[in-house]
Length: 147
Length: 147
Image (cartoon, rainbow over all chains, first blue to last red; front, top):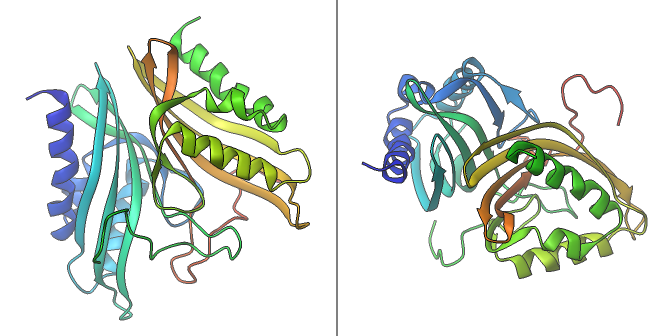
């Protein structure tokens, strides 16, 4: 399997792991010193332990399964370095009853370490409206009628 | 000059180009089919022409110089592929009188093409507050007392 196929499978494998709320399967993909720019605050954070806690908090906030769907994935790789970007749709019902159905942008940087490909950087976000300061959580990718 | 030094210089050169509102100097850094995840809407966009228009709109919205400052830059490179991430502070006065002083996260993907290093992906954002839906434009990097 070439590196693009391997990284594509790794990213697509996250969908099932999120649906299963499998923190271990996800946390093992991160390098120890990963730099995290998450969709919700803080501005920046660092470390696989921080990411593990973030995943536990995220999964704990949903009373339903979290439905994830990825589109427009592009992977760029050379030797032991790669980056990927994609859009993902997250859907579910939170413990407080709030229904989430939101498209998020994600960019991931990888390094191939002795243990295999690891995420050394992850940046997830939604854009905001400069006039109102509101995060634009209802946007859809071009050509998406539903959701 | 090695690739990390070259890419560092390219990214740091953007500070002067933004201060000078030099659209050409910035637009030439983008690959034709660059994928853009910008801090303000839409969700995603594509193309160096779109980026040029975005820069013109951005620069036109300020009545002062735009002060840019970069920190925590990390560049990862292998052969003709690289990615970088950093925080930048943007400061200035808009035409409507609004004072902007905001930290933004940025991740950039590069490919070395025949013409040199080009940006094939750029992702800029601020996080948002999941409870209020507001973009968190007043966050500061850890260890930053001012701004």
